[in-house]
Image (cartoon, rainbow, N blue to C red; front, top):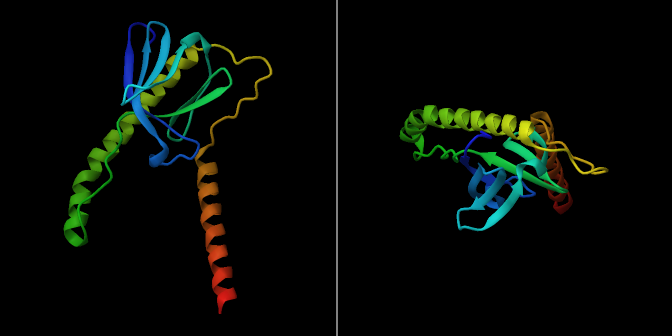
Length: 164
């Protein structure tokens, strides 16, 4: 990708990795610079690729750093949620949509791996003394979500027991 221009759809992931906090746009590698421009034209990242460092694969795509700022990107097109109504008809529609959703997810993963390989090769080193937080692994996300759900259930049980 470092020869010529390369760009893909991407979403800048917020502090909380929910769709509502993501900013969609285009991630572009061109003329030795990495840019991320939102769909509304606002540029949120514009840096020489040599200043990009500590690139790593994350659950949703890639994580990279520019100076002391971390950027997390979900790479590729958004996969449309499976929709089709309720009951047997809804299940049939979802079953028809599933192969396309799986193919889109696979394509997004390959795009993320391409970005990862390119930026790890072309990127620079972190500033001295900067502590880099590595992206969470899938098991860490699952543990956090499971712990959060169990914590909410425990709070609800205590509230129910106290109100009786």
